[in-house]
Image 1 (spheres, helix red, strand yellow):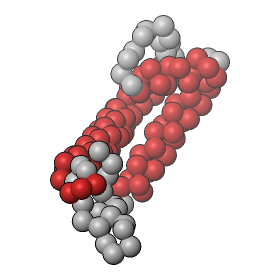
Image 2 (cartoon, one colour):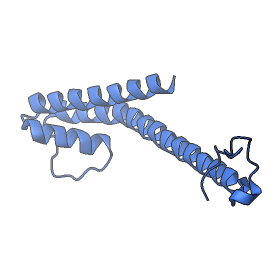
Image 3 (cartoon, one colour):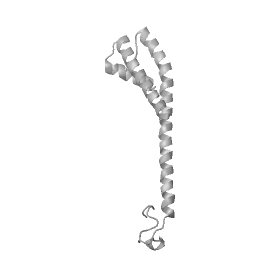
Image 4 (cartoon, rainbow, N blue to C red):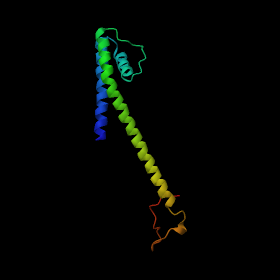
Amino acid sequence: MHRLKALTLLAMLALMIAGGTVFFRHVEGWSWLDSYFFTVVTLSTVGYGSLVPVTVVGKIGTTVFILAGLGVFAVAIQQFGSFAVRKREEHTEWLFTRLIHHRHAPTSAESTPESEDGASANEDALPP
């Protein structure tokens, strides 16, 4: 379920960026690179100010784009941040589990009981 949500958010972000790029390219007459740059800068709320819409349609479109895009961008950042924290917690838990198993494992061959064939009974223990 989390994967579908992440893919949906990623698709929405890509569509917003593509739509904004095409919009500013045609309405403001900017190059594709400038239109893309303005779209990403506006969507991420950085707002360098190096490009500014001058047409009425461009200004109104920018306002609508900001209101719609800010919500999508904020949710995407929150979800991907949450994913990163969850993965970090899982990794930390895995490390602690290994540490606990390592601490409880016998440290010398003398303290490990052997079977009849001479193999250690604790072969799955982590090395010291």
